[in-house]
Length: 139
Image 1: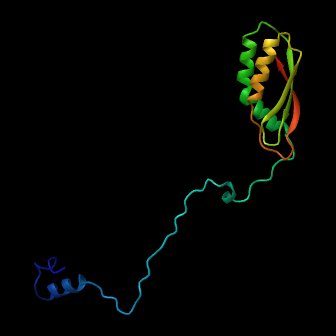
Image 2 (image 1 turned 45 degrees about the horizontal axis):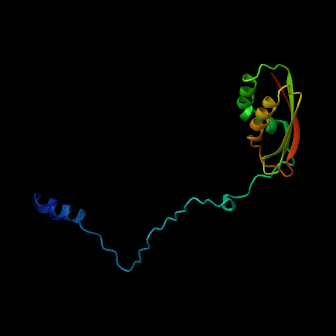
Image 3 (image 1 turned 180 degrees about the vertical axis):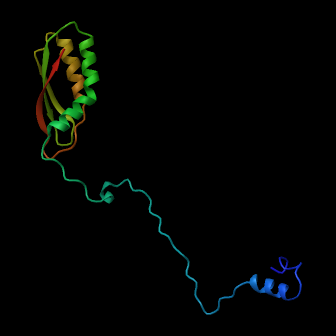
């Protein structure tokens, strides 16, 4: 600190030295500041309370899941000259995966197989009991 005050003289120098003097703390115990760091957890149990599951599938859940595979289903129709409507029956487990798909009113077996394969790829929200529904596709 004396170096910062080297070019001053007299009372100005003394004031400069006093202002830049190191501070001594006696009799006090310094405590380090500790900030806890929490790492993100992959454990779902630590995420807090989960939202309650719906009892079964509702129309919004069905529409969203079918929309996610609708492009695949429509591509099945692009490969077939058939016209009409296919009625798809779907069963969904409580964990959201498709457990069974049956199809009615399909003029070509290959078209039906293509539609079933596409619908089996859909993922639904988890529910308490799963559910089943029928869904029409016009082609």
